[in-house]
Structures are given as C-alpha cells and as structure tokens.
Length: 101
Image (cartoon, rainbow, N blue to C red; front, side, top):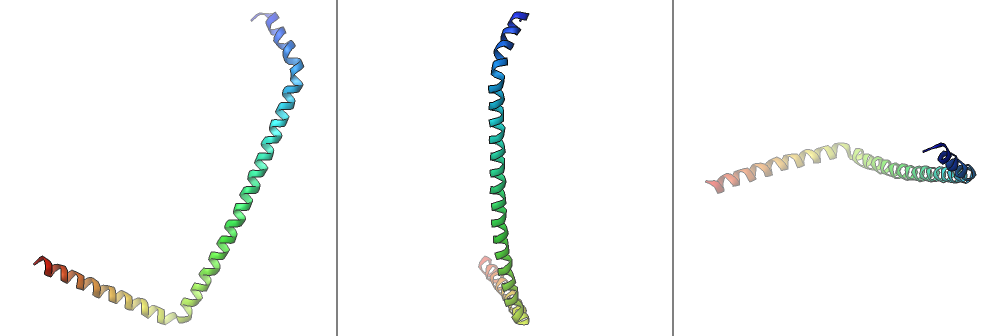
C-alpha cells in the first residue's frame, strides 16, 4: 500500500467513526443487559433451590421426630429385620446346597 491508499482508507473511516462508535456503544449496552438478565435468572434459581432445600430440611426434621419418638422400638425393629435377613440368607444358602447335591 502506498501513502495515497492509506489516505483514502482514512478518509473513508473518519466519517464512519461516529457510526462505528454508536454501534459499539449499543452492543456493549446489549451485553450488559444480557448479563443483568442472567444474574436475575441465577438469583431466581438460587431462591427456588433455597426454598426447596428448606422444605426438604423440614421434612427430615419431621422424620427425625417420628423416629426418635419411638426411639428404642425402632432400633428393635431394625435389629429384628437384620436377624430375619440373616435367617433368610441361611435358608437360601442351604436350599442352594441341597439343589446342587
């Protein structure tokens, strides 16, 4: 490029500079608005998760109260179920041995 070509390009760009700046300003405002909308959406989802988490915590508290009200009975029931599982496992193992022999 020689000097006259550069002068011609500058002569074209100088009058276009305000339009280019306006386009850049509009684009940056649009990007800012998109970022604000994304932040609002994120905040809304966080609030929904917090509400859902609160509901789950409340339900767990109720379940804990139910379990601890009967406390010892529940522990006995769990032990009985474990014992029953051991008996069932032993019976199933012995029946498998009989079927193999």
